[in-house]
Length: 193
Image (cartoon, rainbow, N blue to C red; front, side):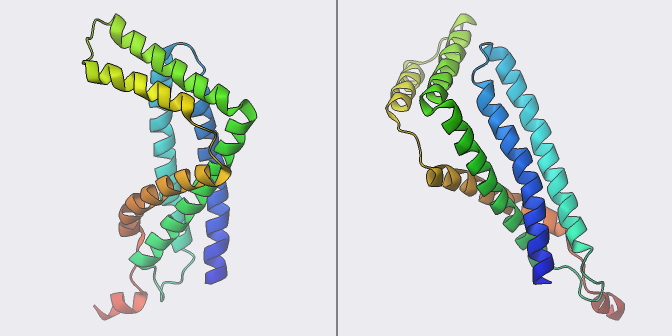
């Protein structure tokens, strides 16, 4: 059963990881589109589509993995939760590696400049709408820009750890829900009841 577990984890993690990594690259690329409203719309639409696909595929993959266990053994809640968490952790590592490679390829300074440009455009759109931002929020925009200009490029381990920690939380949250729907009692217990 262990080899079955790890082969499914690695296969499903690779598929989900590449998909989520491409999504992350697209999100970074969106920073360089000059139309802030278009970027906001694209970002929201892409986020909903990717989140729905991730949840749906993770649920499908967990269900498919559970069906490989015989009815006499069943598939416990803990097994389902462990499977979802492990797949999510590997997905986080793959996304972190892809993100780091992309940011390194375009250059970290270009990435920071695109992010600052996006913040400037967003601030200009809000100001043009006639919305008066409190002084502390306007100051936080300035502080954020200064902090971004001072940052150095993160190492590959920092990038991987950041995405890994995000996917651990995502895996835990989704795992608690998916495991509840995927678990199966062993056939012996069902027959005795």
